[in-house]
Image 1 (tube, one colour):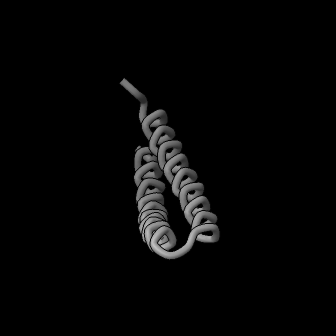
Image 2 (cartoon, rainbow, N blue to C red):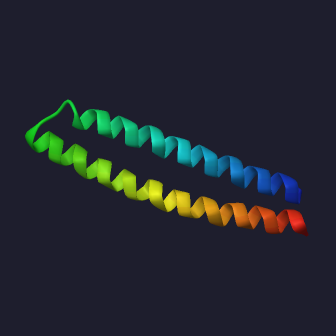
Image 3 (cartoon, rainbow, N blue to C red):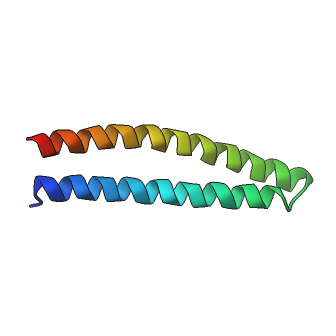
Length: 75
């Protein structure tokens, strides 16, 4: 069984990993857009936009996780 500190730390670490992963995917999809054309560009651009939306949702989730961890630590 994990302690409250371990639970909070694990949540923050997972959140940071997710944000890093999405940042890398976003950057890679942007670079791909610079090198492909026509139908390939359309497909790559759709992925780029979806990842952008996921990054925004992840940033919002991070705020919630931060608040969750603060509540855990204040108990």
